[in-house]
Image (tube, rainbow, N blue to C red; front, side):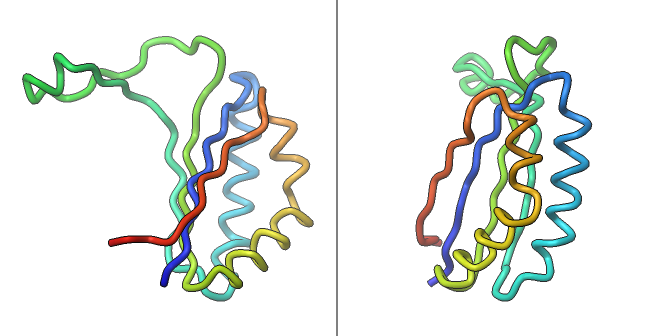
Length: 115
């Protein structure tokens, strides 16, 4: 059963370019890991409220950064074991540099894909 991680990063607004460059480096590295099925990085750029949902409107762009720029990383592996090996290799390569861009430690959500 495929194993997934969603990671939420809150990046210092002054370090977004550095963070994105590091994540591109991590992408090149991760794409060669055994068992990787999917890898996506999303930068939060929009918000939505109930009025937009009820009216079926497109979400408006975020107009200002309050405290941090948020990114969501989604990666999926064929097994938990391949995920664990990739996690270790990422930690040993560029993890400390990524952490220096964050205002708070990142959140990780792990689980097996249902559909």
